[in-house]
Length: 96
Image (cartoon, rainbow, N blue to C red; front, side, top):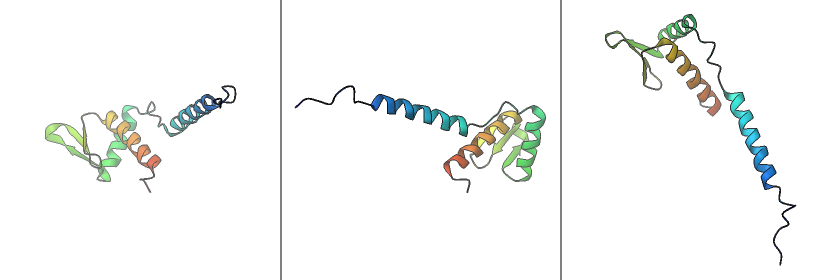
């Protein structure tokens, strides 16, 4: 009995389609971080401190992102991290 006809094989088409769909999903879920300037970062971090999400540790000159336990010495890095962390939780459905 002969094998499947190679002209009928659509697996490569399906794989390409799946790759394109995954790339679109990643693009949709990505978070823009290029718009985080120093003033925006400082404002976000101040709000996070007020909400007890971030704890400043003055003697070590760091900020601790409490939900993840990650430590930062830059408000901009923390703001970008928090945006990504929040988007990741929302994408996973954990933010509900």
